[in-house]
Image (cartoon, rainbow, N blue to C red; front, side, top):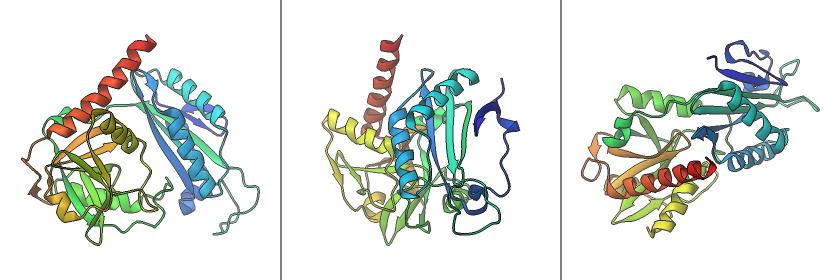
Length: 286
Protein backbone atom coordinates (compact mmCIF):
# COMPACT_ATOMS: atom_id res chain seq x y z
CA UNK A 1 0.00 0.00 0.00
CA UNK A 2 1.64 3.30 -1.04
CA UNK A 3 2.11 6.22 1.32
CA UNK A 4 -0.11 9.18 0.41
CA UNK A 5 0.53 12.89 -0.08
CA UNK A 6 -1.74 15.87 -0.59
CA UNK A 7 0.15 18.73 -2.23
CA UNK A 8 -1.34 22.04 -3.33
CA UNK A 9 -4.73 20.71 -4.26
CA UNK A 10 -4.56 17.01 -4.97
CA UNK A 11 -3.77 13.60 -3.56
CA UNK A 12 -0.97 11.51 -5.04
CA UNK A 13 1.53 8.78 -4.05
CA UNK A 14 4.00 10.28 -1.58
CA UNK A 15 7.00 9.40 -3.75
CA UNK A 16 5.59 11.44 -6.63
CA UNK A 17 5.08 14.63 -4.61
CA UNK A 18 7.50 17.36 -5.71
CA UNK A 19 8.08 21.05 -4.95
CA UNK A 20 10.02 23.74 -6.79
CA UNK A 21 13.68 24.33 -5.92
CA UNK A 22 12.61 27.97 -5.51
CA UNK A 23 10.25 27.16 -2.66
CA UNK A 24 11.10 29.32 0.35
CA UNK A 25 10.78 26.30 2.63
CA UNK A 26 13.63 24.67 0.70
CA UNK A 27 15.73 27.84 0.37
CA UNK A 28 15.20 29.47 3.76
CA UNK A 29 13.40 27.00 6.03
CA UNK A 30 10.53 29.50 5.78
CA UNK A 31 7.75 27.21 6.90
CA UNK A 32 5.93 25.51 9.75
CA UNK A 33 4.82 21.95 10.47
CA UNK A 34 2.77 19.68 12.71
CA UNK A 35 2.84 15.95 13.44
CA UNK A 36 -0.37 14.11 14.27
CA UNK A 37 -0.90 10.39 14.87
CA UNK A 38 -3.90 8.13 14.94
CA UNK A 39 -5.04 5.99 17.84
CA UNK A 40 -7.41 3.16 17.05
CA UNK A 41 -7.29 4.37 13.46
CA UNK A 42 -8.51 7.88 14.27
CA UNK A 43 -6.44 11.08 14.44
CA UNK A 44 -6.05 12.33 18.00
CA UNK A 45 -5.89 15.91 19.34
CA UNK A 46 -6.52 17.24 15.82
CA UNK A 47 -7.99 20.58 16.88
CA UNK A 48 -5.16 21.19 19.35
CA UNK A 49 -2.54 20.50 16.67
CA UNK A 50 -4.29 22.69 14.12
CA UNK A 51 -4.69 25.56 16.59
CA UNK A 52 -0.94 25.41 17.23
CA UNK A 53 -0.32 25.35 13.46
CA UNK A 54 -2.47 28.45 13.03
CA UNK A 55 -0.67 30.11 15.95
CA UNK A 56 2.74 29.39 14.38
CA UNK A 57 1.48 30.74 11.04
CA UNK A 58 0.23 33.91 12.70
CA UNK A 59 3.58 34.55 14.42
CA UNK A 60 5.39 34.07 11.10
CA UNK A 61 2.83 36.13 9.14
CA UNK A 62 2.26 33.08 6.97
CA UNK A 63 -0.98 32.22 5.15
CA UNK A 64 -2.66 29.07 6.48
CA UNK A 65 -5.69 27.16 5.14
CA UNK A 66 -8.80 27.20 7.35
CA UNK A 67 -8.91 24.56 10.08
CA UNK A 68 -12.11 23.13 8.61
CA UNK A 69 -10.33 22.49 5.32
CA UNK A 70 -7.35 20.86 7.03
CA UNK A 71 -9.61 18.61 9.14
CA UNK A 72 -11.29 17.30 5.98
CA UNK A 73 -7.94 16.69 4.28
CA UNK A 74 -6.63 14.81 7.32
CA UNK A 75 -9.69 12.57 7.45
CA UNK A 76 -9.55 11.92 3.69
CA UNK A 77 -5.82 11.17 3.77
CA UNK A 78 -6.17 8.69 6.63
CA UNK A 79 -8.94 6.88 4.73
CA UNK A 80 -6.89 6.75 1.53
CA UNK A 81 -3.76 5.53 3.30
CA UNK A 82 -5.72 2.70 4.90
CA UNK A 83 -3.18 1.86 7.57
CA UNK A 84 -4.13 0.48 10.95
CA UNK A 85 -2.32 3.46 12.49
CA UNK A 86 -1.14 6.51 10.52
CA UNK A 87 1.57 9.12 10.94
CA UNK A 88 0.26 12.47 9.64
CA UNK A 89 2.69 15.23 8.70
CA UNK A 90 1.59 18.76 7.77
CA UNK A 91 3.94 21.40 6.36
CA UNK A 92 3.14 24.86 5.08
CA UNK A 93 5.81 27.05 3.52
CA UNK A 94 5.57 30.63 2.27
CA UNK A 95 5.68 29.28 -1.26
CA UNK A 96 7.62 29.67 -4.52
CA UNK A 97 9.23 32.98 -5.49
CA UNK A 98 11.44 34.22 -8.33
CA UNK A 99 14.07 35.50 -7.82
CA UNK A 100 15.43 34.33 -4.47
CA UNK A 101 15.27 37.06 -1.84
CA UNK A 102 15.36 37.17 1.93
CA UNK A 103 12.35 39.48 2.19
CA UNK A 104 9.25 37.66 0.94
CA UNK A 105 7.26 39.10 -1.90
CA UNK A 106 3.63 40.12 -1.43
CA UNK A 107 0.80 37.76 -2.33
CA UNK A 108 2.99 34.63 -2.69
CA UNK A 109 0.83 31.49 -2.60
CA UNK A 110 1.85 29.12 0.21
CA UNK A 111 2.89 25.53 -0.44
CA UNK A 112 0.63 23.19 1.54
CA UNK A 113 1.71 19.58 2.00
CA UNK A 114 0.21 16.72 4.01
CA UNK A 115 1.86 13.31 4.17
CA UNK A 116 0.32 10.05 5.42
CA UNK A 117 2.41 6.96 6.15
CA UNK A 118 2.32 3.97 8.45
CA UNK A 119 2.82 4.74 12.13
CA UNK A 120 5.15 2.17 13.64
CA UNK A 121 5.67 3.52 17.14
CA UNK A 122 8.70 3.11 19.36
CA UNK A 123 10.21 -0.28 20.21
CA UNK A 124 8.58 -1.78 23.30
CA UNK A 125 12.02 -2.02 24.93
CA UNK A 126 12.17 1.79 25.16
CA UNK A 127 9.28 1.69 27.62
CA UNK A 128 10.18 -1.55 29.39
CA UNK A 129 13.90 -0.85 29.91
CA UNK A 130 14.22 2.89 29.32
CA UNK A 131 16.59 4.80 27.06
CA UNK A 132 19.82 6.77 27.29
CA UNK A 133 20.03 10.51 26.62
CA UNK A 134 22.80 13.03 26.04
CA UNK A 135 22.84 16.68 27.13
CA UNK A 136 23.94 19.38 24.69
CA UNK A 137 24.20 23.13 25.22
CA UNK A 138 21.23 24.67 23.41
CA UNK A 139 22.34 26.29 20.16
CA UNK A 140 18.94 26.60 18.48
CA UNK A 141 17.33 29.87 17.42
CA UNK A 142 15.43 31.88 20.02
CA UNK A 143 11.85 31.23 18.88
CA UNK A 144 11.33 27.55 19.49
CA UNK A 145 7.76 28.34 20.53
CA UNK A 146 7.09 28.56 16.77
CA UNK A 147 6.95 25.05 15.33
CA UNK A 148 9.06 25.91 12.30
CA UNK A 149 10.90 23.59 9.93
CA UNK A 150 14.24 25.01 11.11
CA UNK A 151 15.42 21.83 12.82
CA UNK A 152 19.11 21.71 11.90
CA UNK A 153 20.23 22.04 15.53
CA UNK A 154 17.79 19.32 16.59
CA UNK A 155 19.13 17.02 13.88
CA UNK A 156 22.76 17.71 14.79
CA UNK A 157 22.02 17.14 18.47
CA UNK A 158 20.26 13.84 17.78
CA UNK A 159 23.07 12.70 15.46
CA UNK A 160 25.58 13.41 18.22
CA UNK A 161 23.42 11.51 20.71
CA UNK A 162 23.18 8.46 18.43
CA UNK A 163 26.96 8.41 17.97
CA UNK A 164 27.23 8.23 21.75
CA UNK A 165 24.70 5.40 22.04
CA UNK A 166 21.81 7.59 23.20
CA UNK A 167 18.31 7.89 21.73
CA UNK A 168 17.52 11.51 22.57
CA UNK A 169 19.34 14.79 22.99
CA UNK A 170 18.39 17.00 25.92
CA UNK A 171 19.07 20.69 25.37
CA UNK A 172 20.35 22.64 28.36
CA UNK A 173 21.24 26.32 28.74
CA UNK A 174 23.56 27.76 31.36
CA UNK A 175 23.07 24.78 33.64
CA UNK A 176 19.30 24.56 33.23
CA UNK A 177 17.06 22.05 31.48
CA UNK A 178 15.28 23.29 28.35
CA UNK A 179 13.68 20.39 26.40
CA UNK A 180 14.49 17.38 24.25
CA UNK A 181 15.33 17.35 20.56
CA UNK A 182 11.77 16.23 19.80
CA UNK A 183 10.19 15.86 23.21
CA UNK A 184 9.28 17.51 26.48
CA UNK A 185 11.49 16.38 29.38
CA UNK A 186 9.95 15.71 32.80
CA UNK A 187 11.87 15.26 36.05
CA UNK A 188 10.44 13.36 39.03
CA UNK A 189 11.72 13.98 42.55
CA UNK A 190 10.05 12.67 45.70
CA UNK A 191 6.84 11.95 43.81
CA UNK A 192 6.58 15.44 42.30
CA UNK A 193 6.88 16.41 38.63
CA UNK A 194 9.31 19.19 37.75
CA UNK A 195 9.38 20.85 34.31
CA UNK A 196 10.54 24.25 33.04
CA UNK A 197 7.76 26.77 32.40
CA UNK A 198 6.92 27.67 28.82
CA UNK A 199 8.95 30.39 27.13
CA UNK A 200 10.12 31.46 23.67
CA UNK A 201 12.77 28.70 23.71
CA UNK A 202 10.33 25.87 24.56
CA UNK A 203 7.70 24.44 22.23
CA UNK A 204 4.20 24.45 23.79
CA UNK A 205 4.01 20.66 23.51
CA UNK A 206 0.51 19.21 23.41
CA UNK A 207 1.63 15.96 25.02
CA UNK A 208 3.34 18.00 27.72
CA UNK A 209 -0.06 19.55 28.47
CA UNK A 210 -1.67 16.10 28.43
CA UNK A 211 0.87 14.78 30.94
CA UNK A 212 0.31 17.77 33.23
CA UNK A 213 -3.47 17.33 33.08
CA UNK A 214 -3.12 13.60 33.75
CA UNK A 215 -0.84 14.27 36.71
CA UNK A 216 -3.43 16.64 38.16
CA UNK A 217 -6.15 13.99 37.74
CA UNK A 218 -3.97 11.45 39.56
CA UNK A 219 -3.16 13.86 42.37
CA UNK A 220 0.54 14.09 41.44
CA UNK A 221 2.02 17.45 42.40
CA UNK A 222 3.60 19.52 39.63
CA UNK A 223 6.03 22.44 39.71
CA UNK A 224 6.64 24.46 36.54
CA UNK A 225 9.83 26.34 37.26
CA UNK A 226 13.52 26.36 36.27
CA UNK A 227 15.12 22.93 36.63
CA UNK A 228 18.88 22.71 36.92
CA UNK A 229 20.93 20.03 35.23
CA UNK A 230 22.09 18.96 38.69
CA UNK A 231 18.47 18.46 39.78
CA UNK A 232 17.79 16.41 36.66
CA UNK A 233 20.82 14.21 37.23
CA UNK A 234 19.80 13.67 40.87
CA UNK A 235 16.18 12.88 39.97
CA UNK A 236 14.34 9.72 40.96
CA UNK A 237 12.95 9.50 37.42
CA UNK A 238 13.26 11.33 34.09
CA UNK A 239 10.95 10.73 31.16
CA UNK A 240 10.11 12.11 27.72
CA UNK A 241 6.75 12.96 26.19
CA UNK A 242 5.87 13.66 22.55
CA UNK A 243 3.09 13.11 20.03
CA UNK A 244 4.55 9.75 19.02
CA UNK A 245 5.50 8.53 22.51
CA UNK A 246 4.08 9.27 25.95
CA UNK A 247 6.20 8.52 28.98
CA UNK A 248 9.50 7.19 27.64
CA UNK A 249 11.73 6.49 30.68
CA UNK A 250 15.26 7.91 30.57
CA UNK A 251 17.50 5.69 32.70
CA UNK A 252 20.91 7.18 31.85
CA UNK A 253 21.98 10.71 30.94
CA UNK A 254 25.55 11.43 29.83
CA UNK A 255 26.42 7.93 30.99
CA UNK A 256 25.17 8.52 34.54
CA UNK A 257 22.40 6.40 36.05
CA UNK A 258 19.13 8.17 36.82
CA UNK A 259 17.46 6.99 40.02
CA UNK A 260 17.50 3.20 40.17
CA UNK A 261 18.51 2.96 36.53
CA UNK A 262 15.12 1.43 35.71
CA UNK A 263 11.77 2.87 34.56
CA UNK A 264 10.07 4.53 37.52
CA UNK A 265 6.65 4.26 39.14
CA UNK A 266 5.40 7.78 38.34
CA UNK A 267 6.36 7.43 34.68
CA UNK A 268 4.49 4.13 34.49
CA UNK A 269 1.39 5.48 36.22
CA UNK A 270 1.15 8.49 33.92
CA UNK A 271 1.69 6.48 30.76
CA UNK A 272 -0.84 3.82 31.81
CA UNK A 273 -3.47 6.46 32.57
CA UNK A 274 -2.97 8.22 29.22
CA UNK A 275 -3.17 4.96 27.27
CA UNK A 276 -6.23 3.81 29.23
CA UNK A 277 -7.97 7.09 28.47
CA UNK A 278 -7.33 6.70 24.76
CA UNK A 279 -8.50 3.10 24.74
CA UNK A 280 -11.71 4.16 26.48
CA UNK A 281 -12.37 6.74 23.76
CA UNK A 282 -11.85 4.09 21.06
CA UNK A 283 -14.36 1.78 22.77
CA UNK A 284 -16.95 4.57 23.01
CA UNK A 285 -16.62 5.24 19.29
CA UNK A 286 -17.04 1.53 18.40
